Amino acid sequence: MCNYMVWPCTMGRKSLQLQSILVHLQDQNRAVDLIETCDKFQRVGINLDQKAVQDIIKLMTYYFRLAAKSNLSADVLVSKLTECSSKWSKPTLQLVHQLWTEHGALLHAHQEVLTMASIGQLVDIQWKLGMAVSSDTCRSLNSPFISVLMKIADTSGEMSYKSFEMTVQQFQNFYRQFKEMASVLETV
Image (cartoon, rainbow, N blue to C red):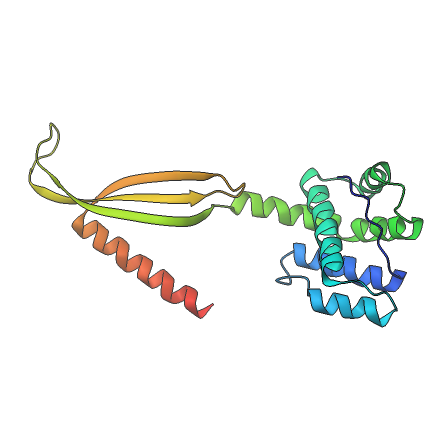
């Protein structure tokens, strides 16, 4: 949780930026607007390049996510930040404490829902047509089948593979369902 970056802005701007990060983490907003954040800094006389502002956003996003996953109280979060670096200003730590007191429980609940609902991401799907020629359990030999291999990235980023076989009719139904899902996703 340690980083030695100083948050270089006035209290009003800090509050707005930290709140926008918390809103982003609660999935109420797709992302923190980097350009808008840079503009806000410049309006109060703080000239930071986009890389520095992006680093600040990443840092605070990381801290808030870590605190939410660990269900840290505002006091523990602030003490961990203080342990990591003495460069955190007292007003900034007070602001983090206040905002985490107001939003921390909600963000923790949101993180728990995401953890329970996470199913991974389909990275690749491969299929091939095969023909069963002999089997101890198959009633009708010389019947075609489809072998499917799916590559799935779980929420931690690790890849796993799932394989299964289907009849041609099952595969055609599977294909139709995927096609329907793709058309629905295009409208989102």
